[in-house]
Length: 566
Image 1: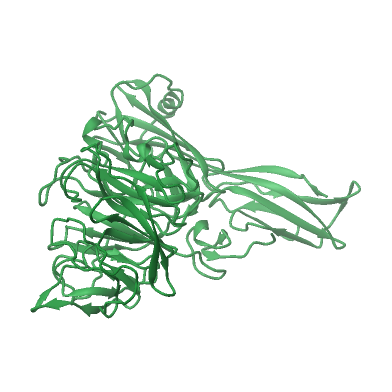
Image 2: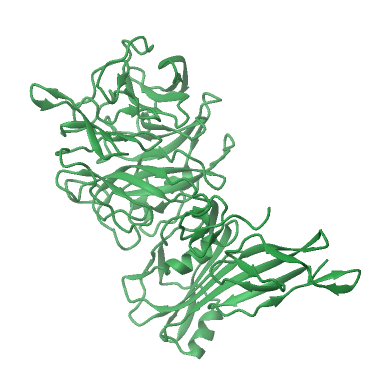
């Protein structure tokens, strides 16, 4: 056996005492021929059984010893703690903040929301609150299963704070995720009070990837790209692509983008970053491909015929997305679809019926490029406040459709209320309002101003950590950084990309959604219609910065490393 059979190692600000393990046989101490640890990124063991935590991330590791071809193992729990004190508070003030119990009646927390689910692989959030005073001092305590952050800071109004990336990774990358208790206290005029006691969840899955979305910060509006870990987007489109290209669509594999707008290029090969197709009519670009559906491999396109702010599509059938050739015998001859969307699996197409405005699906045969078996899922209904269905998007497993219901005659996001819903593909007629995502009963700091402003849901094409994930456009405020008017004109208002977790196996009648987070890496202009191409996990030997980047979940000294044993 290995003694001790289980142990706990605490690492505080990188300081750790090594743990000595020993081998025993029938109560007699022996020298094992080898010692091996499974997660070397959490702790290492030398030839004599001395265990040293790396201090980068916490977690639970198993350490196996071998003696005379017999093996035994021990479990070591590693807790990582960072205490950050830049010298702004005295010891007495720190203790006063730690012991605060009275609820703060002045400060108002604005972001992130209570009960938010965060995936791994994103940049840390900026925490924001209002109604504080200059010179106030704060205590942040974020407690996960294997990691804890204690931070003493000052933050004059407008009050904001963002954890260091290394600290955020320690919190989110330690172990398999789980709940994080968030406690914030304030010391003002000699009195210490509690601002919030919230709880977040870290999903055990990464959404590290490349996001494509429209930003109006560029001339006329351009599709921009935010690479993994980047704090700002880049204008990546080829120089030949000019003009407004706001109504874009992206294939689930990330290979092909369809541009709908005034640009001369209609299809872009994202692998080689080259424009493939120029559709012209009498020397002018054709806008028919605006907000089209593109198959997961980028090969097939279906036009959108829904009413938009610009000319909608006008053609039935399917098209070769790379040559512009109309395909024959697809089953869509003579059929116009509003806002069609392919499932990431390629097995379904969701759409709104052009005449009845019913949400429906077709089965899609990717080999023969044909549709069949139309199924009506949800009727628009008689309520004039909700009977406009727009922007359907199919989940990674093609079993659910997310969409927006609103009251306007157009699917435009510049006017009118909007909220997101979920419909079952397997059980037509089952419809769930995504109340927590929408914030129906959430105490937004901005009050009712932030309600009913949610549009354009687009599923991330893969599930992660037990959740599906929906990107959507919202005109809600973003903490105290973006607090402009809800209603937008050109160049005004608030419009950002948000991300929300949805339970992977929703139960009819229960809201499976969770409060949303604002996607990092976008600018503060008017942003909408985001697609995320998740980065696949990295094999052994690849460079890495975090556990969740590696297929082994073991990023040791910035290299994806196989487990010592399974």
